[in-house]
Length: 253
Image 1 (cartoon, helix red, strand yellow):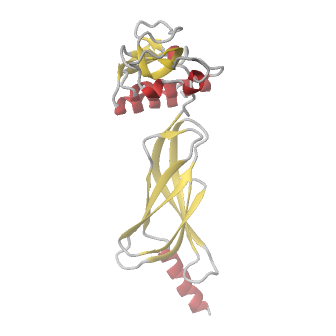
Image 2 (image 1 turned 135 degrees about the vertical axis):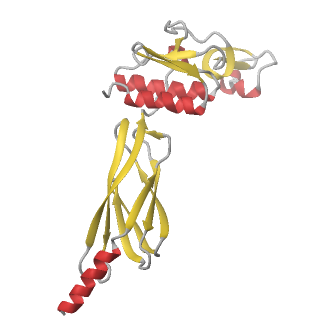
């Protein structure tokens, strides 16, 4: 019996050794929103496979029935982060009942997973943006367009796209009514988190995240004013992620 327990112990500990974990995180993660996280569990052992593994990470568990030697298996789970800012995934735990379901052995793995959690975008008017002159935009943006905020309802002139027709309102009038929108393309915009609408800093940052995404996706250059520092406007995806990162860590120092 003692020999069996000794062999069982050796097999059990060998089963959870020689394993490595890689965490794949998306480059856009928003506070409070579900995010798909992928984990890759690799058996680095030269000969021995591993069986009946449970990976515990970020408060979630995912199971791997079998991983051959020098092989990698992948699984995913949904995770939500409660706070914006820099986050670190520093620890994972591997557990297994192998070879007999009598003892459950576990081994901790230290990770170096880093990610930035952006403020969850909250709708606010693009008219609240700060323009390149530093003045707060208290009025709708000057140019007309088809992707901005609704400025007013006007009579249909025959040249507007059909998608701009306000069908419910038109049914109450003898002439078609269309939505006139503020333009989202044109002059660069600089956003100042302190001047954006919102009752709290978190609300203002959420508004900023919404405007960064909305305006840049409409090809309008956006920058940020962070105290005395100004990030020049641009409209690329990498620039958008940089601005969201700045909003994520704003006030965290």
